[in-house]
Length: 236
Image 1 (spheres, rainbow, N blue to C red):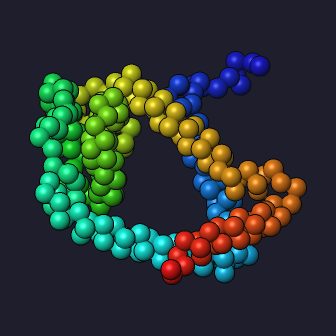
Image 2: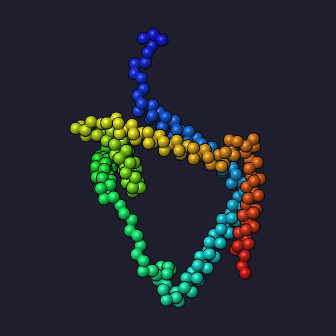
Image 3: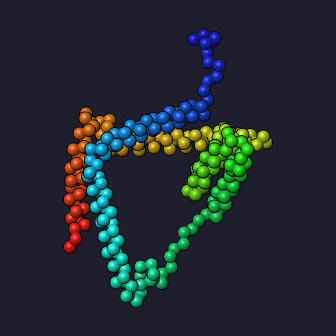
């Protein structure tokens, strides 16, 4: 290849990661759509069985709840019974130990990121308001999960400028943290794709010569399931 035909700029590692993340998201959506459409076809073939199974399952839960309430009423006559339905004990319950330094670090990272991307700051910029809301929603989810590593990565992701919300002028975006976040995002999507493809109905759709023959297997399953539920819910 001559120098005149060389690309002006080779893709960076970050660009390659973004492209792979986008490809995985498209594939996950495609697998989910195909699986959902196939499952809808299956449901249409066993609609009566599904409805009866739901009705009997609900009845069974109601009967179990009534039996539990009856047992609790009987236990209330005991001396050591408390209002929670558990025998009282003098043994203290263990208190979970949390790292105070880690908690403080999580709070600091959360506050910094939240102050930077809070939707109220973009109330007059409609093009950024929805994006800021989406970012803060995910930030809250990560903070509540208690995962410090994920919070650090998302904090770096926000301040790297990758969210399309421009960081402060005095802050130099670091490619290192952004790269770490994208790698983590890639790993999550790879696991999600593997889990999506591992669904039994997707395997049936892609591996059976005639996927709709799975209806016969479902009918056998529901026949046995309904027989057991009818027996459990039978009035004595």
